[in-house]
Length: 188
Image 1: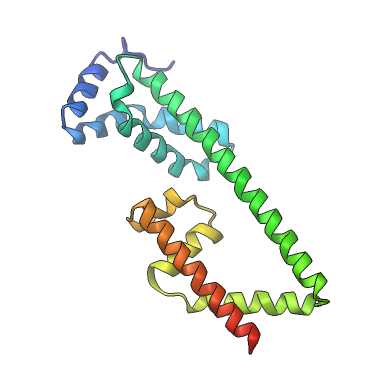
Image 2 (image 1 turned 180 degrees about the horizontal axis):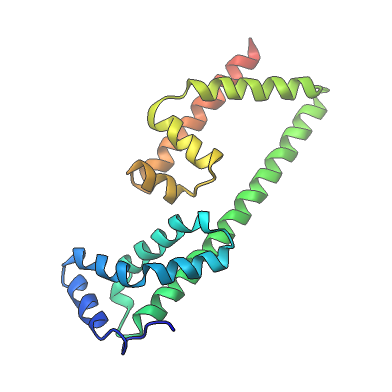
């Protein structure tokens, strides 16, 4: 049975304290509802390994919008945020998959129109791998988390301890460096 505001009359008090500036009190809300939100997310995703970042995003969203709680059942409100985070992740994942399909089609057209054989594609892949190994520090970690592990930008930012904007900029620069390196490698 899910907790309701009558099961936890202190929920409203916790919310008021957080809104009054005691941000550390939000940890009590996370402790109280974290496992419920994790189980809900795992059930929707069907993959418990992907849950952690989305559950964290759920609580970040809840914290940022706590002023909108307005006395509703806190557990139900958090579950609705979790469903919205899940839907956004599915949309993002779908958009990314579509971009990858379009990029693959672009590469196929690019290389087939130029009359380049599969060996040219292998040359491109090996140049990219060599350039990828040349990345260092946070750029290398960000690229690995984003493109090898498939984390969302928010997840990469959390792992690196950076803001989302700084992470986007870091990935932009890393991709530009990789592009320049691959183009230079292929032109040799």
